Structure formats: structure tokens, C-alpha cells
Image (cartoon, rainbow, N blue to C red):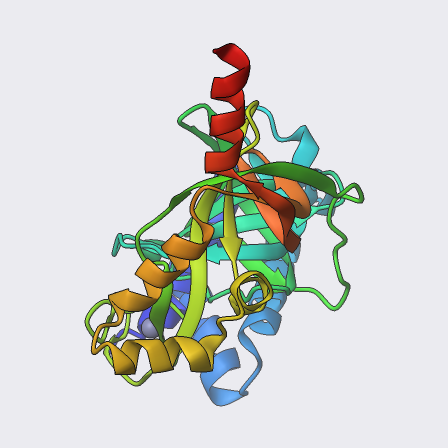
Length: 310
Ligand SMILES: [Zn+2]
């Protein structure tokens, strides 16, 4: 019987060498991988490295060639689509993906910038975690709606790093009105396995599993010049409204309606002026701190503006 995982790893290795111009024996790679992983219990990444080294010797491939294949670049230097690159970066935000063809989507960053990443489901790549740093090896750059992103494909590799990749050093401060709060905000349920947002008790990946409640807001801040998409977590929401997860659960229970939490948060936050500190990545602002701009709300500003123009 064919082992799916070994098959995937084999395809990956064979594909990588094919792009270098070498037709390696897939059966041989498969057999050796299976032996290393199943018989000798060598960890996957170690087994892959071993096979790769063996192939390089076997086909007399200079090491520079393999490294040259996907050069290590900084995020700020990713400007063209269709480039095969490697990137060392920290996962700064994971988003919900409603598409079954997408395994994970979100933002990664290094000290030069932040960029969107997509791990395609058929790439068969392991899951990444927020806050952890990885080497994204042999990924391909792409442009979607005029913005750059990286795609993790079958031939890519994701290797967790011990080092902590720093984010861009300069935090910015945005003062603007919270002009929108998107769906899937308020009291949400996350999958107990992967933390994805569940809809009616169903995780898009794991189906009907045990979940846990969380509080968050996906919103849009407009400072008059730019709009920024932000995500506020429980801590941010508590700071602004006094509503934490426990209180949110109580609101939902008392009013027999989970959506009551979202209504409550909208009532307290929509149109209010916020001072948001964070790191900018394209149209996203990774929030590190948020507070109200005291004494100002949108209606008041609108009224003042009307008075001025009258
Ligand atoms: Zn799940």
C-alpha cells in the first residue's frame, strides 16, 4: 500500500531536483524515505535532509546549486510575482479561511516588512502557529489584487526555527474612527484542534469537534487618509469596553442570543475614535495596543464639522 505522506515528501524532493534539471529515481527516493521514517523512526525533516544529501552525492550536484534555487530574501525585497524564494519569518497573524483549498492564510513578518502567506491544502504542509518563526523554503511569490504574497506549494518546505525573527522595528500610531466591524466578530467558537473559527459547531477542516469560545473584533479603522484592517483580541476589547470573555458569555446567556455580544460591541465601539499602536503591513495593522481617543466620538466630530462649514 502507498503511504500518502511518504508519497508527498517523495514528490516534493523529486520536484525540487527536477527544477534543477535532474531526473531522480522516484521509486528509490520513496523506498529510502519509507525505510528511514517507518523503520528507523528518523524525524521527517531529518529524513528529507538525508535523502537530499544522498541524491546530491549520487548525482554529483554542487551544493551551491541547491541553495541558489530558492535564495533567502527579506520581505521588503519581495516585489515581483513568480519568483521562487526562501524567507525566514514570524507568523504574526492567522486568518480564517473559508476555502477548503486553503490550509492556512495570514501574515508573516521579518524586520523589513510584513506579507500575506497562503498554505495551499494540497501542499500537504504542516500547520504554522502564531508567534512562532519559520524558514519558508522554496515558496513562490504571487500578486493578488495588486499586493504581493507568498504561496506555500507541494515543493515548499516549512521548517520551524529556534530563533525569534524580529518584526519591523518601527511601530506606528494611527488615530482614526472604527468605521466597520466585520462578520465573525464578537463571541466566536474556535476549533479545539486548529483554532479556526467554527460555523454552527463545524470546523472547515476538522468537522464536528469540540470547540472553545473566544472574543475578537475584525474591524476597519479610517484615519482620513488610509483605511487599516485590524483584529482586536479579548485583551484589547476588555480594555476598551470592560467586556471580557466571561462577561460576553453572560450577555449571550442572558439574552439567549450570541449575536447580542456583537450588537453590544458595535454599540460601544462603532464610530468611536481610537488610538491604535501597531506594526503596519500593507493595509493591515498588527495591533499592539489600543485606546479611545478620550472625549471624542464620531457624531461629535461630524457635528463640529457641520457647524464649521455652516
Ligand atoms: Zn479545526
